[in-house]
Structure formats: structure tokens, C-alpha cells
Image (cartoon, rainbow, N blue to C red; front, side):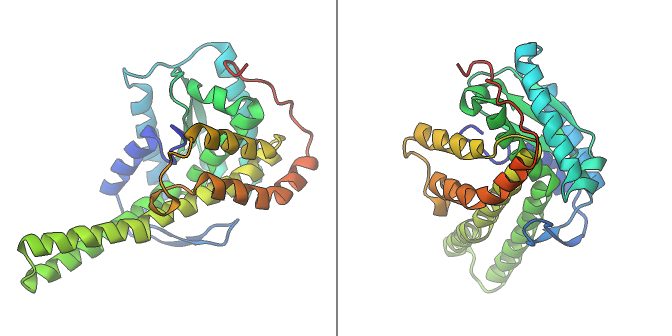
Length: 288
């Protein structure tokens, strides 16, 4: 979340690795939304690559882990409840396979969090003022955990692989047809931009919306007030000051779209929340 990236440093490392180890796979259906997903790698590969990426993040000399109980204990409390909710969810089989772990990274200037395939998570201390309470943190962690459980990283890479293969085929055809030189390069550049805007960016927005939706259901099942997700994104909108890119050219839904969607899904989440023992919304450090 540096104004909430969908895939952080750790997931970018995962994506780089998965591009090398792609194998032919098939389609699966998201159990919550019914959306068809093209996946070209195995869960075991994803978990292995997620673990490798996590080790790289933890061993990065530029990053410092927090061992302050005031910062670590709230994150571990929220993570434990979100994990238990995941094990009760429609992703229960996947959640049981994951080897869950959470690290708090001491970086008060970075408002970010991520969850990698296999259940490796990290929260940056710069997220605390934005989340404000453990319920706000649950909204973020629920969202990130869904990215991992729903295999969004592998899906994005599968889509990218197919897009790149299509561009290579078109490029070869253009060359065979005498479309080389500056004209051919310009055509390829335009086609690349078209693929990015028309396929890859909207695809990522679908992932973000899916993680928002399922994430508040997980947070609600964990006992956290899902309305904190709306409050979180309202704070994000205020902080952005209108400087975010247009939704059409962004990998995320606009703040307005995101908040409207969360409000639409809120009755379902609130029904889950009200059927559970609620958890006190303890204030996070640095959030006073």
C-alpha cells in the first residue's frame, strides 16, 4: 500500500520467479465470484516461489524487522484471526496447505502490506496511522490474504505470458509481411500499449475488487467490523488529494469506485460480522 499497491516488493520477486517456471495448467473458478481463472502453474510451485521471495525480503539489508511488542503483537493478533477465518472459508483447503508466517517491517514511511503464495505475510509500520485500529488492519490483511488464496499472482503472470506470446506472434507476422523498421516498431509499441490498457490493467482491477470483496468477508468472519474498510479507503482518498491516475489507466479501481463497491457488499459482510463475537478495535501504535 504505498497508497496501496496491489502487489508489493515481495510479490514482484515472486512474479519474476514464476515467469521462469511456468507449466501448462487450466482454468479454475473463483468460489466466491464465479469468475473463471486461467492458471498455468501448480500451487506447490507458487508456495515454493513465495517462500523464496519472502526469504529475500527478510534478508534484504535495507529492511529492518520490528521486534517491538507494541508493533508486533497487534499484527500477530490480527493475522491469527484472519488465518482462522481463511481456514473456515471457501478457500479452506488452500489455507490449510499454507505455512503461515507474518513479519513486521520497521518502516514508518511506507504504508504497505503483502501476502505471498504459501501464506508469507509482512506489514510495514507505516501502515499503522492509515489503518488506525486493529479492525482497519484486518481490512488490509484480509485483502492481501485473498490475493494469495485466490492465486492472483499466478493468474496475472499466466495472462502476461499469453499476452507476450501473442505480441511475439504478431511481431513475427509483421516482419514477414515487410513491416519492419520504424513503422513496424511503432505498430508493435501501439499494440503493446493496447494490450496493456485493454487486457492487463482491467484484469488487475478485477483482482483488486475481488480481494476487496472477499477480504471484508474474511475480516467480518474474524470478528472485525467490515465498515472499517470503507473508513480506510475514505482516508486514502483524502490523502491522495485527487492525484491518483484515472481508473482507465490505473491497475486499481478509483477510490470512488472502491468505496461504492464496498458499500454495496457491506450488507453481506455485516450479516457475517453480527453473527460473530466482535473483537475490540484496539488502537494501533503511532495512530493516536
